[in-house]
Length: 203
Image (cartoon, rainbow, N blue to C red; front, side, top):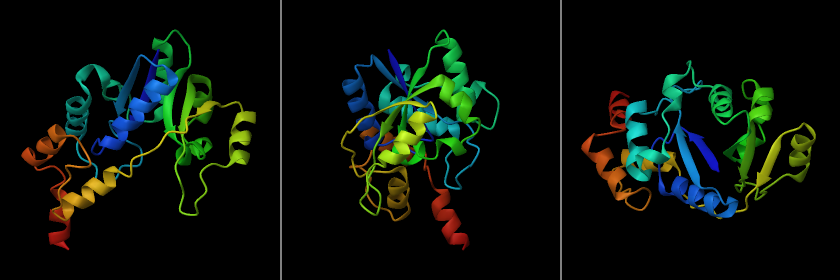
């Protein structure tokens, strides 16, 4: 049984890997497949190229644990399109999909949420908000009554984000504690996120 982890992975970090490891163990999944977004509908100005993000994921996880399916689909890379294709490839059975609670809470605002409802079983990962609240039972009940299929996995999260790594690079700080050694070297060797410096120097 597979579980899928979508994201920009810009870049992939130890927090992503830890989530996948814990979800795999808790859910009894055979594999957790990472799906880097090809061209997201809301492109981040700090987004590295798809080729680099895909390669970093492969370096960190091994090629068999990373899918380039979004490169083969229509653009922009809406989640419903990828979910629909994976669903069809899985004999029209729902696929397991890792999502942060903050994103799951907004799922009805995503493109074609009815298709997401039909094709996905959500693995919801709680995250603490600034006000200290973790989960809204009312919101979960609402989405359950709407027909969304989900399970909440209460697993500990590392305090790491891709944004934190990019900020470290921008400020010339060591990222060894945030991602794998191999990914760190790849970033350095390819001068990734160099546009962060260029943008600041331009003003």
